[in-house]
Length: 258
Image 1 (tube, helix red, strand yellow):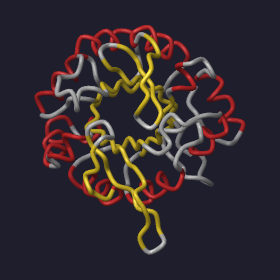
Image 2 (cartoon, rainbow, N blue to C red; image 1 turned 90 degrees about the vertical axis):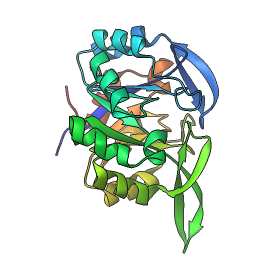
Image 3 (cartoon, helix red, strand yellow; image 1 turned 90 degrees about the horizontal axis):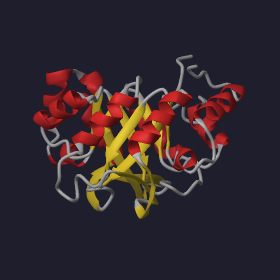
Image 4 (cartoon, rainbow, N blue to C red; image 1 turned 45 degrees about the horizontal axis):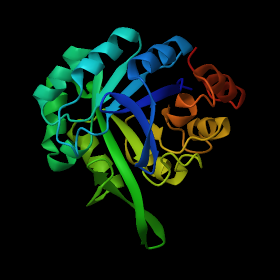
């Protein structure tokens, strides 16, 4: 079995790491550079840096903070927020990113995914999907892709969007459940499995981690078999460590990286 990744997520706004519940009630969680240094030392497999204010505030990614974070980590760094063109991707990569994540800009212009893949390769292109359950159709749940930091319902079916994005060049999907985000109630397993079954690229489960059990479960084939788990609140507020997560997941039968 391929080793699963544990990825801390730094949601950054105005140069500080923040965390909310269902994309609302944002509170300060710390300094991104200090936190990046700590997670790198603890054994994180990757680090995700999301400038969550970039889209709706219409400002560029905080590249100076990205550069500071990049100097502190020796693991893959994914940067998202405010990436609207290949030039923005180039700036992020030059600042130290190994790959970039796009959400709103890709929904506005799907061709951007193909352009980014042509410029840097699909392995550097991560599609971030902020998905929310909006109802049912024929007895099955329906999730839509939201833009602008989870504020705008695009009307686009999240599963179909994932398929299209991969066909255009997205090499990985960062799947954020708006319903589960910050609730500590667990990942949206149904949504995660739907996306995993729909696309042939790695899927990172995000939103809702509240216990070691929940993190291990989302990585197990018996649940969703996600390729990686994104973790934020549990790490930021000292409820656990990367080492504890990996040790517990390994006991549950998950193959992890040490």
